[in-house]
Amino acid sequence: MRAIWELTERNLGLPLVATAVHHGSDLREELHPHLALSEAGRLREEDPYTGLWTGIAATGIVVHRSRFEVDLNRPREQAVYRQPEDAWGLRVWKGPLPDDVVARSLSGYDAFYAMLHELYSGLAARHGRFVVFDLHSYNHRREGPDGLAADVAGNPQVNVGTGTLGDRAPWAGVIDRFIHDLAAFDFPGGRLDVRENVKFRGGNGGRWAHETFPASACVLSIEFKKFFMDEWSGRADAELLEAIKAALASTVQGVAEELDELHNQDTGGDP
Image (cartoon, rainbow, N blue to C red; front, side):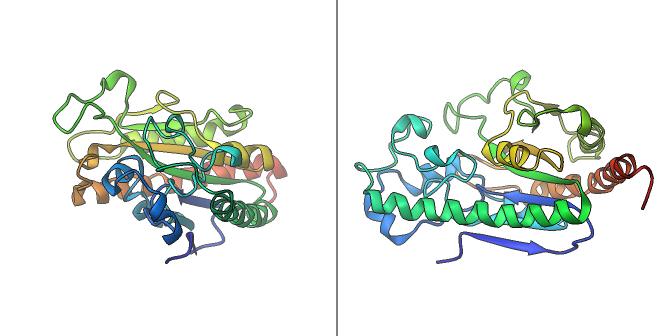
């Protein structure tokens, strides 16, 4: 069994982190006898392939455990799904999970947030401010593999959630530059439809970071509609996966420039 997450630090000089907390499908062996939900049913609500995109950042975090073991983007008391209403109406378990099983799942949750606290504390100490690309994907064909796709008006190709920021204003340059540069990328089939806080406003990972590091952290919760894959079969278009990675990579320089501008404001222009 792989570790819960994989942390890769490539360039400590750039305060940009990319996370994929719902990338994985692994489950501890002790959970399998309790499962009622099929592997295909779990995969539909996971965010496969998002871990591939974390390579564009100086620091990447890819979570290998399924959100159905422990959901790292929910508050701790909601991180283990207990009832169908916790999991989009899905019956995940055959019956109530034993308390000791839940406790072991939550121990992974606690270890993950302890790691994040250490990582983000270091970034704040070295750079003052840092940005996190919190990468996700979302379903838009819930009526079935042959059903109609959800209305485009409420389902952008890319939703940038900034709703967990206590105050958007100090980070407006970073946010607006990211959205502009991502939408300007020459994407196959036409420019990406990128909008802010239309479908999602952000989850617990962003909320926790903004509450814990209020002057330092800017988490962009980036949700890609699953236009790059068949959400029912799990098959992805390799060209679109690479194009999304390239589009995200095209935003890094602009985000770095906006961070430099904020640093200059914070320090009065001192290097």
